[in-house]
Image 1 (cartoon, helix red, strand yellow):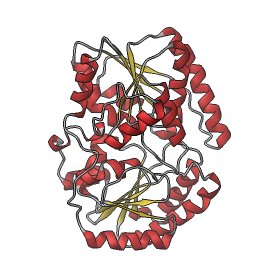
Image 2 (tube, rainbow, N blue to C red):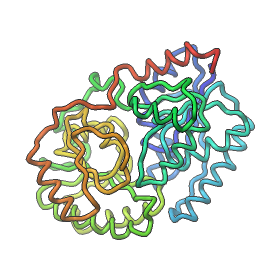
Image 3 (cartoon, rainbow, N blue to C red):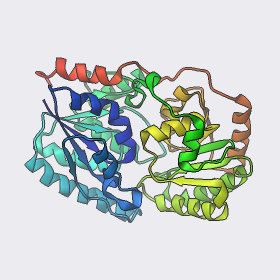
Image 4 (spheres, rainbow, N blue to C red):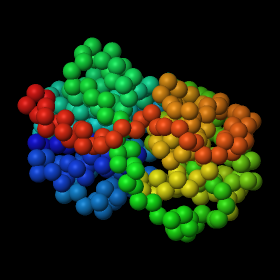
Length: 370
């Protein structure tokens, strides 16, 4: 079975890895990784090198991302991605192509495949994020896909509602948490030495723009910086940089200013990679920002999350997620409350065992009917 896997960023590549390893090692499948989006961008860490270092036999790189992140730049990148993938789909055929999540680049690659009859398998469909235009892109991808692997039962039902059908929709849990109990952590001191993190409590921070409120991002970034400046008095700040979203540079600039003002208290990371990110999560006091990893993954590491603003509004969350507005005082108050709570001891609602194996078995069982 000839399989393509679309990956547009460091984030989705990390999520894919348990599935990619099984596909690569199973002779039933002929795997090609199709990298695009930020993978080819030096500005975002040029993570194509990370893919190449993992040793997968077949990897194609498609360059289509512009650095300009205003609405015009995002729309132009979308159109360029469609154009590049029109050529790619004309020259390459697959039995099935995996796509993941809700990025605008992912939507563009999928939309380009519709006239060619490309059959897509969508991971993490059915979710809701009202503070991001990704919500629209996600449903576009869902409508273009033939098979669906949502992460909760509620999302499975949402896909039924969006598509108007109930075939080939399988609740498999979150792929990023596959086999999490067997994950091999490095010891804390070695991790800290690797990245120059001092021996003091740190917060793992990730902020992205709210793309449905572009006019408010300047104020939101200012409130973020105010809160982080105050928190830097008691915590070291490990900050992973924003993705290529509309107005992402506003947050990057605010973080760069914070780093300049508090050089000894801030570490900025362009691309942790999944292994290092999981280690960073394990040893952090708590997480802060508005990223899906806090909602989906942090509970498995016994961490509380301060989820700021509306970017993740509507996404199912566990009891470890504490919401607040983009207001410095509210963020600081939330940090005080989370500090008192210590470690989170509840379940992760996104966790199901053997997610990658379930996907593999589903493909083999349904191969003739897909």
